[in-house]
Length: 287
Image 1: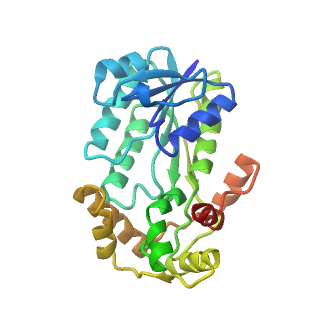
Image 2: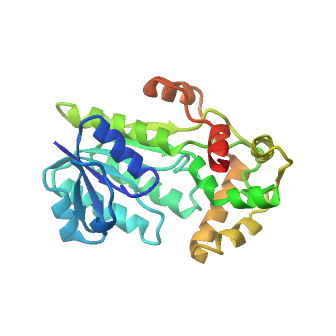
């Protein structure tokens, strides 16, 4: 059967598609602009978005398994609710959903609360689902690289509790493994949750030390006050989103994103290789 990938053009989704193609899965993607899509040969491209119900219905034709990644938008929850309803209507009973680490605890952060709601909807509607809960993406550090390199300051206020940042490639490969496992099963499998974490639990000062080593000169941690971070984000994203990023950062400072016992070992066993590290990502960004 066909696996529908929603969110296929982003940093995680593109890797998911590549991983599925490598596993010889039948893949369809949903995108607003097929002309700009650049996917491997054999990937079917459907045009539409998550608020276009006719396009959604068409995209779900012949699909049994869904990968759902909602972008952080002002109407993210509406998109998730509509998509899961249309999926159920189409007979889809297998889902891999990209949530977020600690979705049920950081309830004041909008995209955490949205994903917690979608998790509840998946359970209430009887989907057999794998809930993937990633920590903060290492790949997002591309947004702050120039500040680090040009000013010698790591500006992301992640605090000293610790955040086990995860690489998008690790997220995508786990997603593909779960999609193929569910799609090839004779029936819907029981639901489960997987925390997606990195190999190292990093603090603000610890990340600054990594950048100091990579650059060969001192890099300081900018501190735990998220107001400056909000202002920086607002320079290139909508103010509501910058504020949401601030709320997320405040949670990092107060709670961190700390793996549970066995999370790293579970992922290493599932992937059959070590997890990608922050240190390697920093070197790649500089290179």
